[in-house]
Length: 125
Length: 108
Image (cartoon, rainbow over all chains, first blue to last red; front, side, top):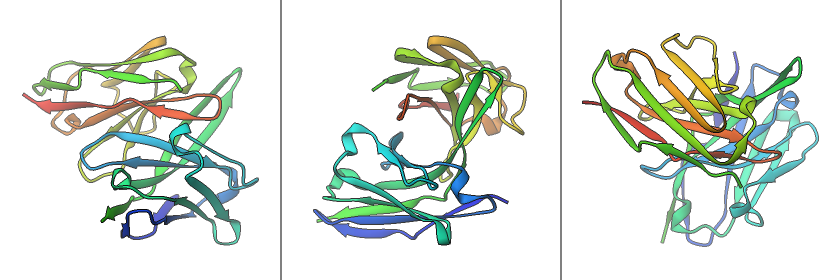
């Protein structure tokens, strides 16, 4: 069965960096993009970025550009998201999610079908 | 960036009633790239609807999605106790994605 298992919670200092991992199992890791979504306490979902595990190509929301780095290690089916220069606004639950894309006839669909359990990152002064 | 605005922010209804949730985009969205999720407290989001109107596997038929262009709707025909949760719409752009801010569906 498909599973995405994320690294554990952590507390970081202002200005520090955090690296969250997302280990995939139950499917071919390189066949599906991994996306990162965060949720601040009591707030909504915020899409951050994606990585193509096959090619390593990635992109992010404009507000995170220059501050977020996505990498992967295909030998262990794991994707990573590193966020730099942390502020208190970065305190959030960070999720990885698998993006499924398929085409039927002339229509193509995108959606997140499996999610990790979330990693709580707390930024403290 | 396409901004998705969901309304209402909170919807208070009773079990058995019909719920209508709205998702409006700041510019036209390809309907096959419009998705709805449900999120319960302490859980990751769960896929409900993709392609604006296609129910995901295992989703009851009381959930339906509709819309095109900039206006999309999630309808729950007869609310069950387990439907009271947060609901988010999401769109996929060329290389990015955005979520709406969510609608909280609460028991009246």
